[in-house]
Image (cartoon, rainbow, N blue to C red; front, side, top):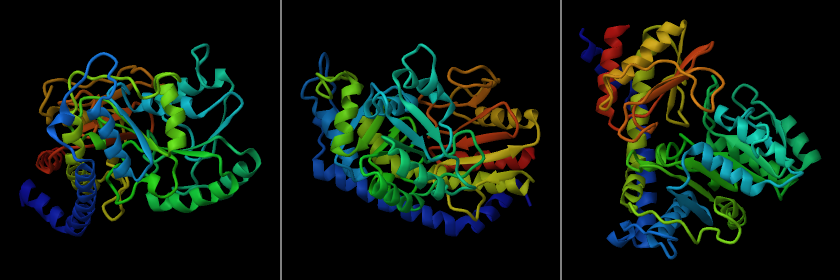
Length: 404
């Protein structure tokens, strides 16, 4: 049996999973299409603006569409939110005040947010008088007893959840798993804002965290919701109360969202959002295929093929640094852009260890496209994600079959 035949056998075993992914994509595609139709998108929405950007129809109606898709009252969507980290930080600065407490119920935040929380003499939230507490997950579950005890006693201003795994070995969290703990938190502390880092998790399920009690969701347009076309930007969706506070930090209290032009225009944002449910389904199916190939080659994979995914990331655990580096380099080699580049571990801004990244992407760093990254530390875990066509991921699977 050659490699292609082996891959086709694996595909047959994954057909029930693929069918479920396609059902979710259809549901989400309908939701996005109906939002476009309800707002009444026309080609005039794609035109850019200059200067202050007052009455920017493309910007403002795009935010209204995102609010409808996520089931929220309001939204900020902007190319001036430079990345997921900047977007999360903007939301935190908007919601937190001196003397407030923030509780993360999924443990430590992602590496690049460390200086936002704790940086010395850099305007960090800690330096402004905000207190932080962290409760780790218990296995892959919320530690309900500790969380509710803390919330009851401390009434935190922000309760933070990271849906995806970051650089850890845990699984991503399902929206259904969030609902009961959110209800109990709100019962004990109704004035707390529940804020979700939703990066990598959008359109993987039929519901988003804001539809089960979260006050705010944030993410990056160069991940799932940008559909591989959005060139930059981030989104913040949530309640009117939360967004009104955050918009004052996004610009300043006297301006809020009234300003902010973008001469390049918004077509790629609209088109990317429209494509996003389908592209996410391609990445998910490819992730299952790659995961099953690597499992059959003797590597630990998180999550496994018989487990549901709640983000687009597939973790592959290697025994050595060399194995990890070789895997990342193969992904770069099979990319459509910069395929001749050789990824090398290096000290990347915002991370505490050297990091290796494969990202031969049309949009720089777009992790909805085929990409892989990892901190160089034990355990040697490659965080593989994306792929805008299933066919590209199948080509990668064939090459992995040959290599291992």
